[in-house]
Image 1 (cartoon, rainbow, N blue to C red):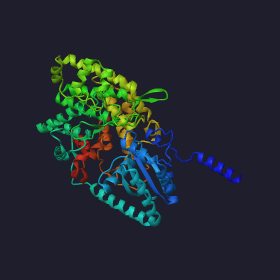
Image 2 (image 1 turned 90 degrees about the vertical axis):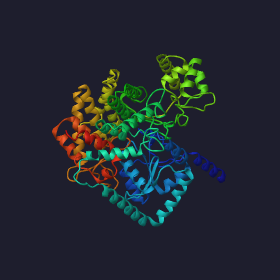
Image 3 (image 1 turned 60 degrees about the vertical axis):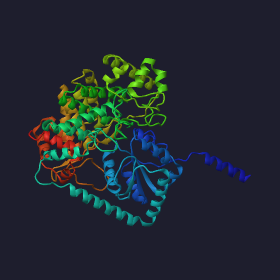
Image 4 (image 1 turned 135 degrees about the vertical axis):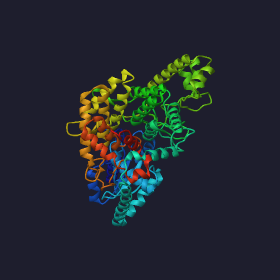
Length: 605
């Protein structure tokens, strides 16, 4: 009888789900929320987690990613949902999950560490940190078996040699900091604009003059570099540079980086020929590329570039409009996922010949197959123009205007069908900085298309609401204080909108945010930048000038905002920063593209 009762109690206990202290469920960040049901005791980045690590003398495992990242989803499925791996993490580590878009400065610091120690970095980013806050070892995507072994090995080493490992980590980070600080020193008295020719030489040395873009493998839009090259060559008028820029703009808008059906740009292509995108669509790309195409349209008198820019802004209003509990938000969401709701990368955007026959008329199927190269033997294919409109009209034995109208109609059919039958996961975070960039694009676009003005005004009003009278928030769903990037991008956006439309409130707040950014994040004593308040990790590099990321550096954005604000005090601050170069800029001008171009633009102000 006792055995029967005991067996019954065991069976009941086994049936009860194990309770994990995972506080990510229902988080406002979709990326963090998707880890809410993991068997891992995830914590968020903050003092509580670091104090717990010190109290228990455990290594901190920090895993950084973002919702639209394909390999982040893969590692989630393979490792972070795995009970055996969860047990190891829960027993031996303090596990922290980070959305890189909500903690960009922490992400930047860890990327810097992994790049320096591993030679490359990306996402998912996985870094083990000592309780003192010193990064020890890091990697990107790790296959399940290798990750499980690493967790075991590292835990064993830590249990035997934690003091020595802590000392080694502190020494390693000290050496990295010393090496980086060695580049962050002023060179001879030299204006940043004096690096312009060196920058142009650097970029053209990596230019793919046959296929467009920079580099020889994957192709990114490289907006800061291409836009800076466009700006600097306006006065120089080097023919080979203009040819390269035009080639790059043409292939980016006509090949696999651009969505042929509904517009918008993907994050990058995985091949050097711009044919196969990595299917994420990011807000920052679709904010910055219109600005590039608008300026190129003006510089080259090319109406097609202006059309691409306007189409991209309309894509934002139709596909990336944010929502709130009260309805439509004026802001735009962070991204559209690379994988569809069935976990197929690109599944939302690919079409088979069978799909076309089911949706389109026979004449439209013929047009689509000729225009896009989709035929009965094709696998699922991304629609992409295989020829010019003139060539297509000849093949269809029709005139260009009629073919263009037919293409528009069949695209609408496929887009409507896709909206009804397919889903792409959305990262619905409303990020302050990225929306600041978008507002600059809408300020420019509304001058050419009045339909964009209400969207721009709603976006400006959203950004005004991120200011509570004392500080700027990082996102609509977070109370975290904004970084330098948030302040600078928002100031630039509001001032650009105010200048374009006469919105007095936007201009006033933009100037206020620019002034606050200088006071909060810039040290007049030693001329260095602090990119965020309360970073928690030990002090990092003393930064004289800030490198570009996929978007212009926060330093550049603040300088642009300061000149737009028009006050003598802000202009003088900006001029002072632009007046001195550094060894890092002189040795690597490519990474300071936006700053160099901005310095030349405002040199004589």
